[in-house]
Length: 414
Image (cartoon, rainbow, N blue to C red; front, side):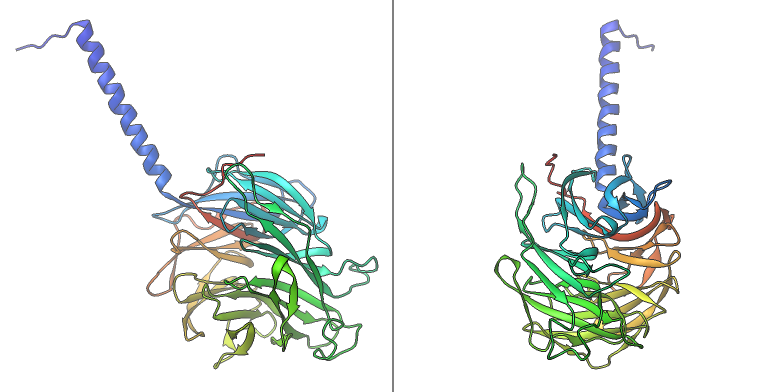
């Protein structure tokens, strides 16, 4: 028996088929969207064909394979020369980028699709900013030199720390950056009774960490006027409006040449990498005071430059720049136990963990001009290469920051 259709029936069939295809496409689109677990922002210090003008590569991370793929509009201008550090606001709606050669911080609004839009630029009080940290109330930046006319690479002086108060944003207004509340020097002049040496000592800052509670901030630094160098951690309590008060016992001893600092999510432990000594120093925290952990120091690779502590699981990871490796650690009572070493791209200088699932880890590889991605075992702490890793970036990447995909971005556009 042969079935026949009139034109009306044919149109109904075509319409039904079209609806089915549209439904399938919509479902596929929704599935594709849900496979993006994070957006990762990688600062590259030299855009192709430019003179130290930076760019921000924006990657989307696949939740199943960890594959990192740049979003269609990427990269974006960093708003200055030689971007070296990044931080995101506590609501994941804003990205703050430090451009070292322009002495500024550029605030970008993050769209729901991961695109970034320049919104505000503020100058740092000192010269050559190098590190940044943020929480809901404050944006902390460390400058290589104090804001003195005589300070420069030719006539160096000790560094400084400034705190910019933040006012929470809304659905229509981005986070507001206030005037810097504090500009404390990181020098022997500031702690004359604690730091040995003369007022001419040049204390070079290297990193900054805001404890999870937001009540304390720590700056790693070393005395460059002596050989071998002497390392320190300068500790402050954070008061109303971002006012800093040096902690009793600060600065704390920190090896030879501390290069990076991180803390656990609970604010119980602080970890510092020592670039020269090739190890990690661990400290317990009590009312802001740092006490060295038993078992210190913990071995790392050559020239460790970056460290991250898993916010959900008891693991830590250190990027070793001249080895082009990551050392993985388990954490027990604060003490670190090595889980092994993993190969990255050439000269990793920054490291991060995806904030959505804590399942993926990535490094920015300065000389490799790429990003290495890993899948992180949440039970063992071991690492496996992500699919298609490493991922190309712009020239000389220096920093990484990330936000979760679901519910991200403020949608507030300038």
